Length: 500
Image 1 (cartoon, rainbow, N blue to C red):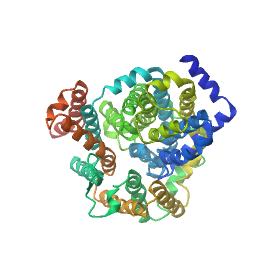
Image 2: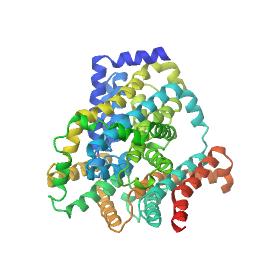
Image 3: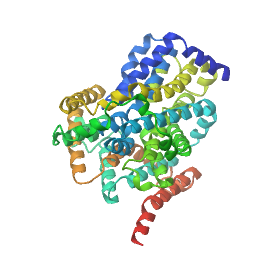
Image 4: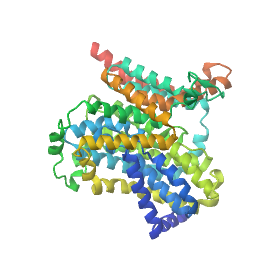
């Protein structure tokens, strides 16, 4: 296996294959940074072109898109408060606060460093533990998956800023939106009000665009174009590339333990089907806040929180590939499309894939490793360009973002109705923000709602309605105990201390 992996790095060193990696990385960087044009869409658009590619070149290009696309969702989140992808949503909380504080270069540098460390840890674990870890993931039963999703729902709610009741209501709203459309267990439409458009449900991409891009566009439209521009220009006047190198003090503030712990959380979440970068970043963020010496600064400009979320969501890439290659189960939307790339070239993901065709897959492992290093190098190369986003004429910039966002929604669904849905959700998100309701829990409710419902119903069907099914598995019990522990440590104990 080691010899074949070495052959994978040698294959990646071939000029044409390496160019495919660079092209894929730049494509992922662009698609991930622009709201609406996610890494998922980039790989989906690439899929038809892989027919004429060599299988190694196709997998290398896809790996570059994947790693860069997950990272670059934080770029516009930090600079413009509009995450380019759902995985960058939690990073936006602290990243944009640091940007407004005049520390945009350090925020972008820390984001890239954490993403690179997380990506490398994820790939190393993928290479070293693919087979044994996938066997462990295979042992997860449906009740265990429900408990995991419940843990994510609860932690997202309790770490949200503002009153807990408002965060709970926002989460409930997101969960309600996720129930619109075809029932996951029975082919019957729900809450469609007789509209064949709503039978399709509300897709994730229109929800993301509405909750962040459209909402931000509406909010910015009421602010004069010159407000805050002078501050932004002064904060980033003539930035040097070395300014994007995180200072030693900032790295010590985060600590190596936080980087590694968050990366491991990301890998573990990525291994579970349906986990995804968003869940990984939120759980790692909650854990970092729980163990931090200064939890009160989370959401107000914490390098520790920013590093935790970014380290976890890129580490998820390595974790998500494990069940895809060893069990044929995609870990998230991107790996689901990678599944299609493998099938196009006659490779069937499953237990026999690594045993019989590891030499074909090895360049993809090598590409994920090298792309993780490229993530940090990219901020040194393009960091000044990222920061110039805040200096572009705001009328032109937001008009461009609005156009690209709507094009992205249409390209993902070919539905004008979904474009109108993104606008409607944007207006709703603006009203939520106006009255102090956090938007992020609503988004996570939309993302996690289908999994929460499916795993709950399947578990109760198997147990014939007996809720103790969630207490019969050690893994499920551990996850439920963690849920209660998080509620106590992050909400109840601080509340009791404040009253005392």
